[in-house]
Image 1 (cartoon, rainbow, N blue to C red):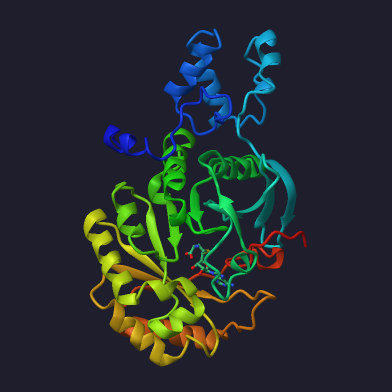
Image 2: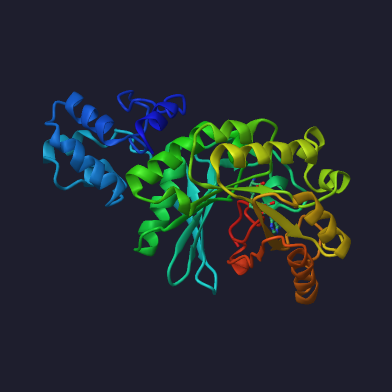
Length: 356
Ligand code: SAH
C-alpha cells in the first residue's frame, strides 16, 4: 500500500498512542517511536517496542527485557491492548477455538485453522452480531459492540503464538458483520499487513452485503478478497434466511458488487450456504447461475453446519455434488468449503460464547 492509502486510514480510528487510554497495539513504527520519546527514552527504543509487540508478541510491556529495569517497572499501567485467554478447545482435526476476554470483560471467539502449508485465523469483528441470520449461532446470541482495531490484531497474534508458527491467512468470518465496523476492520487489515507481515491477498473479508458499504469499502483500494454471503438466488427466500436482505434487494446488491469489481479489479466470492431442501434444489442452481452469468466471480458452497437454535439439515454428499455439477455446467466457477472444527463448535456459523 502506498502513502495515499495510509491517509485513508486516518479516519479509521488511527488514534495517536499518546493518549493514556489508547492501546499501543495497532500503532505503527513512527507512532511507537514518538511514544517512547515522550516517555523520555531514546528513539531506537521505538523499534525495539515495535519488534516486541509485532514479532515477539509480548503480552505485557514489563516483559520487554531489553528495556531498562527502572522504566519497565513504570510500564505496568501502559495500555498494550492484548486480550487474556478465557478458554481454548482443540478439535480432532487440529482446529483450535479460543474464547478471548477483552479489557471490558466481553468475550469473543477466534479460530485457528492449520493445514500443512497454511495457518488461517478466523477473526471476529464485533462482539456478537446484529444481523440475525436464521442459520447462524452468533446471530442468535445478540449484539454488544464493535471491536477496536487492537482487538482484531490481538486475535491474530494470539493464534500465531499459540501455534508457534506464522499466520499465513486471515478471514473475517468470525463473530460479527465486518462492514458495520469498516473503519476498525480496515485499520486492522493495514496493521496486519504492514506490522504483522501478512499479505493482503491472503486475507478475506466476508459480508452479508449492506447497502453502500461494499462501495465504501472499495474506496480503500485494498487487495483483500471480498466474499459476499448470497445464500439464495431468490429475493423472498433470501429475506427468510438473512433478515437484512429486506432492505436490500438482490438486484441492488449485485449492482454494487459489479461496481466493486470494476473499481478494484478483484474477483468477488459469493458464499452460498447449502440447506437441505431449502436452497439446494436443481432449480436454485439454475437460478443462481442465471443471476451470476458474466460476473467475474466464484461461488463458495458451504454445507450447513448444524446449530441447536435452528432446524435446518445439511444436504448429503450426492446432493452437494449435484449442485456443484449444475453450476459447473453453466460455466460458474465453484468450490465447496468443508468447514473445519465442527467437533469444537468452531465451524462457520457455530461461534457462540460457550465452553463445551
Ligand atoms: N457476517 C459475515 C461473516 C459470517 S461467517 C457474513 O455474513 O458474511 C462466514 C460465512 O458462514 C457466512 O457466509 C455465513 O453466512 C456462513 N454461516 C453462518 N452460519 C452458518 C452455518 N450454520 N453453517 C454454515 N455456514 C454458516
